[in-house]
Length: 199
Image 1 (cartoon, rainbow, N blue to C red):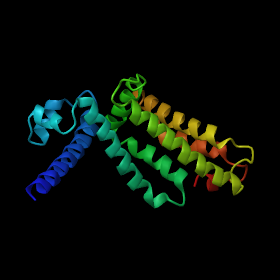
Image 2 (image 1 turned 90 degrees about the vertical axis):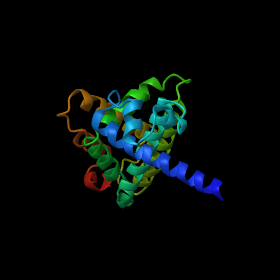
Image 3 (image 1 turned 120 degrees about the vertical axis):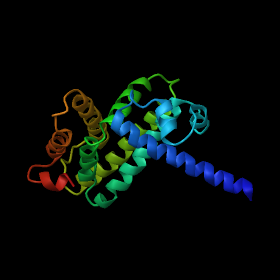
Image 4 (image 1 turned 90 degrees about the horizontal axis):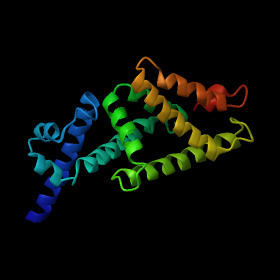
Protein backbone atom coordinates (compact mmCIF):
# COMPACT_ATOMS: atom_id res chain seq x y z
CA UNK A 1 0.00 0.00 0.00
CA UNK A 2 2.78 2.43 0.91
CA UNK A 3 4.43 1.58 -2.37
CA UNK A 4 1.34 2.66 -4.32
CA UNK A 5 1.23 5.92 -2.33
CA UNK A 6 4.89 6.58 -3.13
CA UNK A 7 4.27 5.92 -6.81
CA UNK A 8 1.33 8.35 -6.85
CA UNK A 9 3.44 10.98 -5.08
CA UNK A 10 6.21 10.46 -7.62
CA UNK A 11 3.76 10.95 -10.51
CA UNK A 12 2.35 14.07 -8.85
CA UNK A 13 5.86 15.50 -8.29
CA UNK A 14 6.80 14.78 -11.89
CA UNK A 15 3.68 16.61 -13.10
CA UNK A 16 4.48 19.53 -10.78
CA UNK A 17 8.01 19.70 -12.20
CA UNK A 18 6.70 19.67 -15.79
CA UNK A 19 4.10 22.34 -15.09
CA UNK A 20 6.66 24.56 -13.35
CA UNK A 21 9.24 23.97 -16.09
CA UNK A 22 6.68 24.99 -18.73
CA UNK A 23 6.11 28.27 -16.92
CA UNK A 24 9.81 28.97 -16.25
CA UNK A 25 10.86 28.16 -19.83
CA UNK A 26 7.97 30.13 -21.33
CA UNK A 27 9.10 33.13 -19.29
CA UNK A 28 12.90 32.80 -19.33
CA UNK A 29 13.60 30.81 -22.48
CA UNK A 30 15.53 27.65 -23.17
CA UNK A 31 18.92 29.04 -22.21
CA UNK A 32 17.55 30.86 -19.18
CA UNK A 33 16.08 27.73 -17.61
CA UNK A 34 18.93 26.05 -15.73
CA UNK A 35 18.47 22.78 -13.87
CA UNK A 36 19.23 24.72 -10.67
CA UNK A 37 16.49 27.26 -11.33
CA UNK A 38 13.97 24.54 -12.17
CA UNK A 39 14.98 22.51 -9.10
CA UNK A 40 14.70 25.57 -6.83
CA UNK A 41 11.24 26.35 -8.22
CA UNK A 42 9.92 22.94 -7.11
CA UNK A 43 11.90 22.65 -3.87
CA UNK A 44 14.35 19.96 -4.99
CA UNK A 45 18.10 19.63 -5.37
CA UNK A 46 19.42 19.39 -8.92
CA UNK A 47 20.06 15.67 -8.40
CA UNK A 48 16.55 15.30 -7.01
CA UNK A 49 15.06 16.97 -10.07
CA UNK A 50 17.04 14.83 -12.50
CA UNK A 51 16.02 11.71 -10.58
CA UNK A 52 12.61 12.11 -12.22
CA UNK A 53 13.90 12.59 -15.79
CA UNK A 54 17.51 11.43 -16.13
CA UNK A 55 19.01 14.38 -17.99
CA UNK A 56 18.18 18.00 -18.71
CA UNK A 57 17.48 17.05 -22.35
CA UNK A 58 15.06 14.29 -21.27
CA UNK A 59 13.29 16.83 -19.05
CA UNK A 60 13.00 19.24 -21.99
CA UNK A 61 11.51 16.52 -24.22
CA UNK A 62 8.89 15.84 -21.55
CA UNK A 63 8.20 19.59 -21.30
CA UNK A 64 7.48 19.60 -25.05
CA UNK A 65 5.22 16.54 -24.71
CA UNK A 66 3.32 18.34 -21.95
CA UNK A 67 3.02 21.43 -24.13
CA UNK A 68 1.67 19.25 -26.96
CA UNK A 69 -1.00 17.80 -24.65
CA UNK A 70 -2.03 21.30 -23.58
CA UNK A 71 -2.17 22.43 -27.22
CA UNK A 72 -4.40 19.44 -28.05
CA UNK A 73 -6.73 20.38 -25.19
CA UNK A 74 -6.79 24.01 -26.37
CA UNK A 75 -7.64 22.86 -29.91
CA UNK A 76 -10.49 20.61 -28.71
CA UNK A 77 -13.18 23.29 -29.25
CA UNK A 78 -12.05 23.45 -32.91
CA UNK A 79 -12.95 19.83 -33.71
CA UNK A 80 -15.23 21.06 -36.49
CA UNK A 81 -12.66 23.58 -37.73
CA UNK A 82 -9.24 21.99 -37.14
CA UNK A 83 -7.30 24.26 -39.50
CA UNK A 84 -8.56 27.22 -37.49
CA UNK A 85 -7.42 25.38 -34.35
CA UNK A 86 -3.99 24.82 -35.90
CA UNK A 87 -3.66 28.53 -36.71
CA UNK A 88 -4.82 29.47 -33.20
CA UNK A 89 -2.24 27.18 -31.58
CA UNK A 90 0.46 29.02 -33.55
CA UNK A 91 -1.15 32.33 -32.53
CA UNK A 92 -0.95 31.25 -28.89
CA UNK A 93 2.74 30.45 -29.26
CA UNK A 94 3.41 34.18 -29.48
CA UNK A 95 2.63 34.35 -25.75
CA UNK A 96 5.21 31.67 -24.83
CA UNK A 97 8.43 32.69 -26.60
CA UNK A 98 10.62 30.55 -24.37
CA UNK A 99 8.75 27.39 -25.36
CA UNK A 100 9.00 28.32 -29.04
CA UNK A 101 12.73 28.84 -28.54
CA UNK A 102 13.03 25.46 -26.78
CA UNK A 103 11.11 23.71 -29.58
CA UNK A 104 13.16 25.35 -32.34
CA UNK A 105 16.49 24.66 -30.63
CA UNK A 106 15.76 21.04 -29.81
CA UNK A 107 14.30 20.31 -33.24
CA UNK A 108 17.65 21.24 -34.82
CA UNK A 109 19.70 19.33 -32.24
CA UNK A 110 17.41 16.31 -32.65
CA UNK A 111 18.53 15.85 -36.27
CA UNK A 112 21.32 13.82 -34.64
CA UNK A 113 19.80 10.31 -34.18
CA UNK A 114 21.59 9.95 -30.83
CA UNK A 115 19.94 13.06 -29.36
CA UNK A 116 17.33 12.33 -26.64
CA UNK A 117 14.71 14.37 -28.57
CA UNK A 118 15.24 12.59 -31.93
CA UNK A 119 12.44 10.04 -31.57
CA UNK A 120 10.06 12.64 -30.16
CA UNK A 121 10.44 14.91 -33.21
CA UNK A 122 10.33 12.07 -35.75
CA UNK A 123 7.09 10.78 -34.21
CA UNK A 124 5.63 14.26 -33.78
CA UNK A 125 6.15 15.14 -37.45
CA UNK A 126 4.80 11.76 -38.60
CA UNK A 127 1.69 12.17 -36.48
CA UNK A 128 1.14 15.77 -37.59
CA UNK A 129 1.51 14.88 -41.28
CA UNK A 130 -0.81 11.88 -41.01
CA UNK A 131 -3.47 13.77 -39.06
CA UNK A 132 -3.31 16.88 -41.24
CA UNK A 133 -3.31 14.83 -44.46
CA UNK A 134 -6.45 13.03 -43.32
CA UNK A 135 -8.12 16.36 -42.60
CA UNK A 136 -7.06 17.84 -45.94
CA UNK A 137 -8.31 14.76 -47.84
CA UNK A 138 -11.70 15.13 -46.14
CA UNK A 139 -11.85 18.82 -47.11
CA UNK A 140 -10.74 17.99 -50.66
CA UNK A 141 -13.39 15.27 -50.98
CA UNK A 142 -16.01 17.75 -49.74
CA UNK A 143 -15.04 20.12 -52.59
CA UNK A 144 -13.52 22.72 -50.26
CA UNK A 145 -9.97 22.16 -51.55
CA UNK A 146 -8.76 21.57 -55.12
CA UNK A 147 -9.52 18.08 -56.42
CA UNK A 148 -5.86 17.54 -57.36
CA UNK A 149 -4.46 18.59 -53.96
CA UNK A 150 -1.77 16.16 -52.71
CA UNK A 151 -2.84 15.99 -49.06
CA UNK A 152 0.40 14.40 -47.83
CA UNK A 153 2.62 17.03 -49.43
CA UNK A 154 0.36 19.86 -48.31
CA UNK A 155 0.46 18.53 -44.73
CA UNK A 156 4.28 18.46 -44.78
CA UNK A 157 4.33 22.01 -46.18
CA UNK A 158 1.99 23.26 -43.44
CA UNK A 159 4.30 21.80 -40.77
CA UNK A 160 7.31 23.39 -42.48
CA UNK A 161 5.53 26.74 -42.75
CA UNK A 162 4.51 26.75 -39.08
CA UNK A 163 7.99 25.85 -37.86
CA UNK A 164 9.69 28.25 -40.27
CA UNK A 165 7.39 31.09 -39.25
CA UNK A 166 8.22 30.43 -35.60
CA UNK A 167 11.95 30.77 -36.31
CA UNK A 168 11.34 34.00 -38.25
CA UNK A 169 9.22 35.27 -35.34
CA UNK A 170 12.01 34.49 -32.85
CA UNK A 171 14.28 36.66 -34.98
CA UNK A 172 11.66 39.33 -35.73
CA UNK A 173 8.96 39.35 -33.02
CA UNK A 174 6.80 41.83 -34.95
CA UNK A 175 6.06 39.12 -37.56
CA UNK A 176 2.48 37.84 -37.21
CA UNK A 177 2.93 34.07 -37.48
CA UNK A 178 -0.77 33.26 -37.33
CA UNK A 179 -1.73 35.78 -40.01
CA UNK A 180 0.86 34.37 -42.40
CA UNK A 181 -0.25 30.79 -41.69
CA UNK A 182 -3.90 31.77 -42.15
CA UNK A 183 -3.00 33.28 -45.53
CA UNK A 184 -1.28 30.04 -46.57
CA UNK A 185 -4.30 27.96 -45.52
CA UNK A 186 -6.48 30.28 -47.61
CA UNK A 187 -4.24 29.70 -50.66
CA UNK A 188 -5.01 25.99 -50.47
CA UNK A 189 -8.72 26.59 -50.93
CA UNK A 190 -10.75 26.11 -54.06
CA UNK A 191 -11.73 29.56 -55.43
CA UNK A 192 -14.76 30.82 -53.52
CA UNK A 193 -14.14 28.39 -50.63
CA UNK A 194 -11.39 30.27 -48.74
CA UNK A 195 -13.14 30.82 -45.43
CA UNK A 196 -14.69 27.34 -45.38
CA UNK A 197 -11.39 25.64 -46.14
CA UNK A 198 -9.79 27.48 -43.23
CA UNK A 199 -12.11 25.52 -40.94
